Amino acid sequence: MTYRTGFIGATTEAATAWVGSQVEDAKRIIVPFAGSGRDIQSMAGPERTIVSWDTQHYSAAIVNGVFAAKSVETNVDKIRYRKGWTYENRPIKNIDERCAGFIDWVADEGTLFDHACMASAIVRSTLMGRMTQWYANVETLYKRFLKAREYNSTFIGQPGEFVHYEGSVYDDFESDAIKTDKYDLMQVDPPKIVVGGDVYSANFDFLNKALHGTVEELPKWNWRDSLELFRKLIIGVHAERVVFLYVSGVRPAHEDVRAMLEQYGTIEEEKAFDHRGRTDYGIVLRRDA
Ligand SMILES: C[S@@+](CC[C@H](N)C(=O)[O-])C[C@H]1O[C@@H](n2cnc3c(N)ncnc32)[C@H](O)[C@@H]1O
Image 1: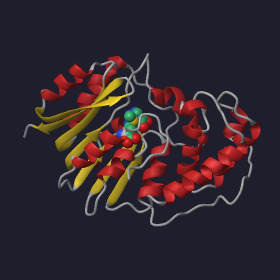
Image 2 (image 1 turned 90 degrees about the vertical axis):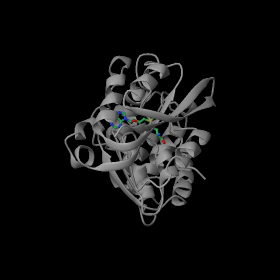
Image 3 (image 1 turned 120 degrees about the vertical axis):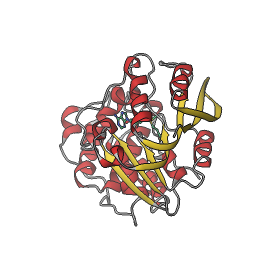
Image 4 (image 1 turned 90 degrees about the horizontal axis):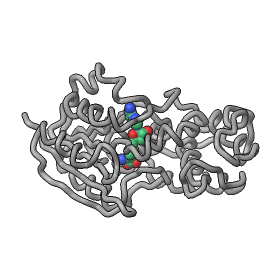
């Protein structure tokens, strides 16, 4: 069973299974863009360490509060309210004061595990899960929270070790984790640029602020810089193999990303997955020695 938390841009079931199948006997895996942790969970295994980053608090809550946790830790016993950032700012269209107050209470008093459950409940309480319009009352929000809690409880204590950094991977290029450490595999599933920007900085900033994320403004991605940012990872990280996930119909184009990857090694495998009118691509690159 692969992990699923309602996160936009999480890999599809088929692609996730394929990512998991690429692990082989890798002991050390680096994941610059953790997202919902879906791919991380598919790659986890005994005696394996997965080192990851994400600018969103949501990812830290999942990796540290669910996968790396030894038991369920929760402080939420009923709907409680507090006047905090979400209450004061009403950062998403149509959110009412009770939902906002409940989110604020969990943000302040909830555990990391509770934050993971609340983040999932928040995404699922927006219209079509798109994070642009609120579509729930506080009872529904609480129901979704409880459902997420039940679901996340089954993913506690994944095998192996997890080291997760809440922040931008590009801010850590001078750290040992990137500068000196060696990895058997790097899995890259970057933000994709659709109509002007990425969905995370556009729509997830509210979630990050609501749950007291440490990154003040989520980085804005644009198509002009993306290829160089991808290249920076391929050059800068010491990984023998790279599993890179990309998609058709975005900029930079899949062909350009593929050509950039080929400059640094041999493409060993390529896979295409149909995904709602688009094609998701998986590329396995073996780095030149
Ligand atoms: C396509 S998603 C990854 C989805 C992931 N494969 C999964 O299993 O859910 C891309 C992620 O990159 C994150 N991100 C964007 N800029 C970043 C940066 N500079 N450093 C680390 N993470 C970043 C976003 O917050 C988003 O969660």
